[in-house]
Length: 193
Image (tube, rainbow, N blue to C red):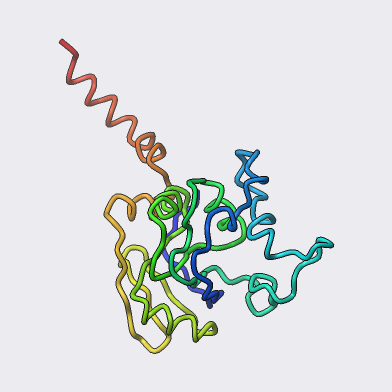
């Protein structure tokens, strides 16, 4: 997992509500534990026509959205079943952050453990972002803020441990492994009775 400190990008704006994890990555693609390559299956049933060609009307297939790394979505993003494949697919697709007025708790947790930043903002702010896909947004993880081109800034919630893991580019296990020497030193000085 790469460290995530800042994200600067125009956004992919998709006002659709209730996008669930089975729509993000359909269950038939969950037979792998490899993260690389899942992006080609993200939103598979919406991205491709019956003949397998890209649907030109689907938001991720539209040329202006190529290379954008922030998704602004409608409410209740990531609802449905728990699957780490969903954030894996989105990061492999090139996304670094998802902004919505409501993000499902389990999806939010899985995203944070896998380097995808879920940002929850007030609905009015999200609606403004959805109306301006060509605004370049600047996200600062250390400051926990989203800055708009006009200088306005909005803070988002991110607990200290989640923030540290994103900034260091580690999950919980990586965090502990990085501190193995200190843990071993502590264990040596505190012998079991």
